[in-house]
Length: 124
Image 1 (cartoon, one colour):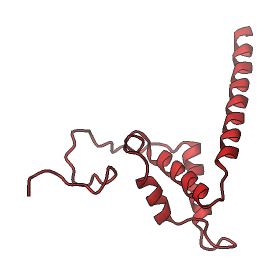
Image 2 (tube, rainbow, N blue to C red):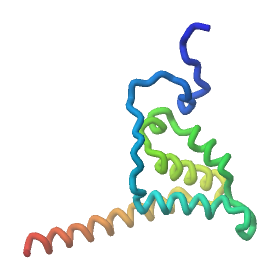
Image 3 (tube, helix red, strand yellow):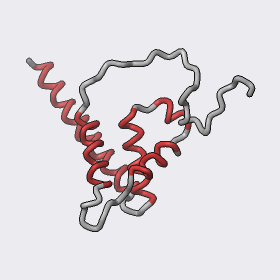
Image 4 (cartoon, rainbow, N blue to C red):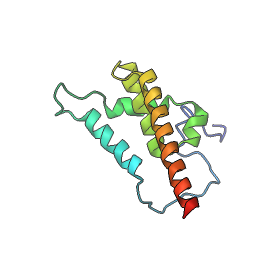
């Protein structure tokens, strides 16, 4: 044994030495994190009519398939969300083009709403 930590992939860091502090504080979940958790429950529910659309094993595979840079940079629920999108796209249940278009429309609506809020604040 060389004393070097061997890993099975960039996601397999159990037992690897690290100088990064371990954050032990609990934080309040953001609304999108709660919705992401709920989405997994809906997609993986075995009681769902027609059966589950995905399993937690598939979720894990999707997370472990993320590029190393993304895996290290993304938060817990961000990894979940990207994995669910990848798995649902893989299964043909999600059209990535339609998702991109919807995200752009939501971003435009959000920007327009905040632009109006800024105009209102500057007049006050």
